[in-house]
Amino acid sequence: MASSPISPNVRHSGYRIDRLAMSNRIDRYAVIGNPIEHSKSPQIHRAFAQQTGEQLEYIRLLGEPGHFAANVADFLKTGGRGLNVTVPFKEDAWQLVDELSPRAASAQAVNTIIQLDDGRLRGDNTDGIGLVRDLQENQGAILADARILLLGAGGAARGVLRPLLESRPKQIVVANRTASKAITLASDLATLGAVDGCGLDELAGKKFNLIINATAAGLTDRVPEIPDDLLEDQGWCYDMMYGDNPTAFARWGLAHGAARVIDGLGMLIEQAAESFYLWRGVRPDTAPVMKQQRG
Image (cartoon, rainbow, N blue to C red; front, side, top):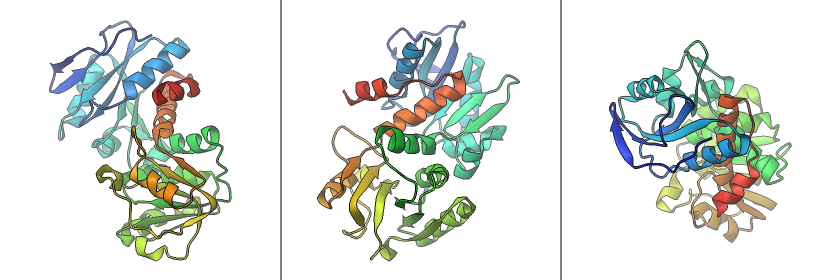
C-alpha cells in the first residue's frame, strides 16, 4: 500500500517527479502530463490501493514535449509497471506502444500504458468506459435507445464515442463548430452504431435525451454556440470537465431545464478504476472514493 504523502518535486533523468517514497520492492505507476501538478490521480489510486490491499506506489511525472518516449523509458527503468497519460501526450502514447486495445485504436489515443510480462507496452483508453460507467452505474442513466448529442470532435470526443455506441443508443449526433471534423469522426465509427456528424449551426429543431460536452470551451468559461431548446423533457446534461464550482455548461443545463446536470469527476474516477483493474486485476469500489473526492 502507498503509505506516505507525496514528497516535494525533484529532478530526474529529463523529467520532473512528484513522488511517493521509492522502493524496489513494490510496483510503481505514474500519471504523465504537462501540466501535472493539478492531477487527482495519485489521491485516487492511493485510495484504490488502500482499499484493495494492493502494494504499489503512484507518482506524478511532468513530461517534456518532444521527449515522451524517453520520459516513459526512464520511468520504466526505475521499476515502473504502467502509466496513465494525460494532455498533451495521449497521441504520443498511441504512437509509442507495441499493441493497442480496440477502444484505443478507435480513440487514436492512449490514456493507459500497461507493461506486459515480456516487456512490450500495451495501450488502452479507459476514458469512454469511465464515462459510460459513471452515467449508467453511478447516475442511473439508461443509454439504450436514447438520443445523445456529443459536443466536440477532438480527442476527448473520439475517446468516448466507441463505448457510447456500444451502449446501444437510438442515435448519437456529433456536433462541432467545424462540421467536417464531426462528419469525419462519425464516419470513422459508423460501423459501430447509429452516429451522424454535423455543424453546431445544424442542430436547430433537434431534441436529445442527453447532451455531453466534450469541448474545451469550459476552460474559458464558455459554452458552445448551441440552440436553447435542444433538451427533451427530463433531458440530462453531462460536462466531461469538472471543478469546485459548476462549469459553464452545467450552468447552461440548469438554465435550460435539464433534469440532471453532472460534471466529469465521476468519469475521472471510473476511468482510473478501469486502469487500476488493467494493471492489477482487481476492480476497486469507486463509491467511497467518489465520496472522498466530493469532500
